[in-house]
Image 1 (tube, rainbow, N blue to C red):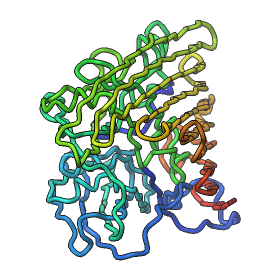
Image 2: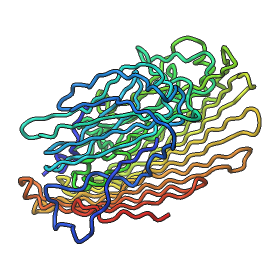
Image 3: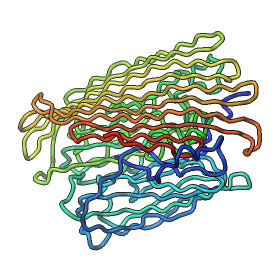
Length: 530
């Protein structure tokens, strides 16, 4: 049997902080011998959004039931009673679904700006409910005027897949001292063009990049060179890199996050209660385009393109919408400048196939980019230097028929942004590490077992004049072990599974350390260690 048939259960539409809210855990004595027809609502260990204790106003953005690929369309009107400069804006999605359904991808646009990308949990026959919150204060400029709203969670409902996805999305606005937020939030125009205000002094692009849609790019990290006997092939192997270009010139590189949706790795029983990192709040890749501000500020449209390195030619499966955040110099009609440094290293990408029993592919890839430029502002000349370095190593081993499939992979994405103007130079250095270590085995009795560990880690250090001022470290690790029987009716799968998540965030701002464990769909542990 080809294991790829069940590798992922996601079949949805192509398309910063968040938390998934849940209830208290059950006692371990209540754990059944195997999964039944109901289980605990989804929950993650991520920290809750901190909310100001002051006056607030709420607006409903969308309320819809998704049965097919028809988008919800509505109109957003700014709230009354909380002003138009807010201390915080929080998005909340409440969803529910029951019956049988795959995981699905979704997006939410306000005025064309993507403010949320998400996926859904797979339901129990008796039904589940879940809630996701996200700080969306950075999009405040969009929320100040009346806007069109579009939301889609592409779905299929028929005699087999019965789950209708029912969601409600709200925005809560908190009055008080306005938060620091971009002055403008822009989207790309026709032909992927961008026209910035002529007095832009900082420009940041966000790209919500996801490999999805049910094809091989949904699990791109398992692709092998064309000559290897495997069900997902790509000439360059599994290396993927999300690039952004301005007028054809490379402006930013990044490692995509290796998302695992809630049907991933052939085993939805891993994810029914505790999803993989970022599954319900897809975080955008950020690119600092300030070195290109002198070019972009000429009042003319400039082409901005996003592409994914490594995708086989002519193959779809990636979606990468772009938001552009702009900070303006209020005391200047035009900010001039120049790109002064552009050094792109050669992309090294080696995927070596070794035939045998088992088969094996070893991948080693890396890329570097440095860009720098200055802007002449009302407060003097400011130079921004962006350095980014990517690396990916992986070992992929499988047997004939893919009845055993093993992957051990690591991605690093190191970035430093130095801003040098009046006063000491300020640098933010970010070291991101993503890990995936897992195996799938299918026994002669059609018993499928998945053992998997996923890591989402980041260390951030801010310094001024060479002296460290702020530091933080994130470590979000999800581990699981689940098994079920293939080719039998749902009630004969005899599925079992244990999944744990530990989310640690600590540094200058304090400590957060929470652990969750679910066994056969019962939340058995919810522990705080700070």
